[in-house]
Image 1 (cartoon, rainbow, N blue to C red):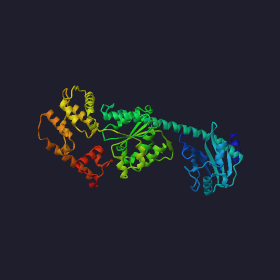
Image 2 (image 1 turned 135 degrees about the vertical axis):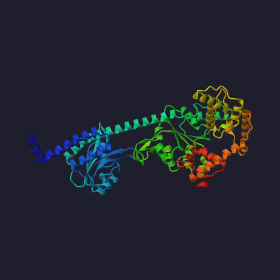
Image 3 (image 1 turned 45 degrees about the vertical axis):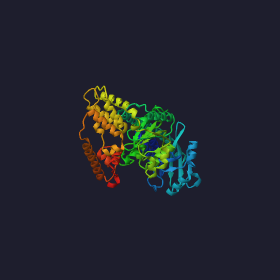
Image 4 (image 1 turned 90 degrees about the vertical axis):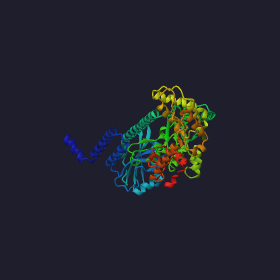
Length: 543
């Protein structure tokens, strides 16, 4: 009986056709359960449907939230002219709109202009398409997309064709919903995983100090401004020299805001190679550029509903500034290599030690971005304007590093404290912290042994900083030594200057970046610029 049935199948075209369609429906179920790559599944399904239904092209289109149109997600059109292709955007109108509105199949003559949207009609005409069948992809009463079948002949779609396609569309709709749900879950898991790693890195990093220390009028004024700005979502621009604690103030703004339970994400724009800033900020898709082997969620997306802290914002490349401006104004952006627009709700805190107004005047920074950042500026005072806070900071750092090094330091000699208070601290709190760490490391007894001689500068600098005389006096009180210190200092300064000149010469005057003099000397770019200014060195001389 089996042989007779197969023989009948081979001789009866109708039975053979029904068998092919039944096999296709079974294949759809198998494909849907065996792969979660939506585009791969839909391309294979489209090819199968085209062969079984004897059509010339089959496409699956899904709504594009950003444009309000339909995007051709998968297509099988082996003999097409290339006008109709994947990723094309088509306006929902005519047959496609009717199919989605009624959730029922629609068959039209593609040669009739008003049956299609203008852009769809132009594509159909260019490809020589004469007949179209639009089938809505419906699952649980919800339209997810469109299955479109095209013929370049006037061969009509029979009721049996439409019925079969309608049944197939139900299976395809399940594939679409499953894959979209899987993709959404994967993206959320990926974002959470990256956020977890990011937060772990933040916790492991040295914050410098855990709380804001000091009671000087200058610091109190800053904290009053923080209390004023924190509850709002207004952009805050932190201005001040390097090492003044701008990141700490940014965290204080976040901790006092409505977003304190969400993520605080930091990006130092000067610490990242120029070519990677855009990827770090906005993220990228797999294959977006050479070396992009995985999808990456950007800092802007990680900070959604939280706070984004852009440190050294003056170092953002000019070509990226328009995209950042749009993200801040419209609250939307696209990852590198993606056309999908993503919405974000981020509170921005920016910081810089550069003169942005001067940069705007020199065409180095966009004026519209500057005005967008300069909503609520807070200037962080340098440590030399917080002299009364220095003893408090010294005490804090001594205890911090003594505990880390398992030492017991009970006192800071008066002469040492006098010298530390008198110094102008060009590196601000960061310089003070590093100096105290070195002092604690050198201390052998219960009293802090600070190498105050390291704070001495040349006589030229002393004329610029009156406080230096007090430092030298304190050094003498501490060491009771009147050795010929100036010659040693002069020699050290000369050596420093020669090293900077050599590095700039080798780097052809380039200061920042991976191939710049700062990287070559293994120092912060702003530190190098400060030393260049001190020695009267100009990068352009070596370009």
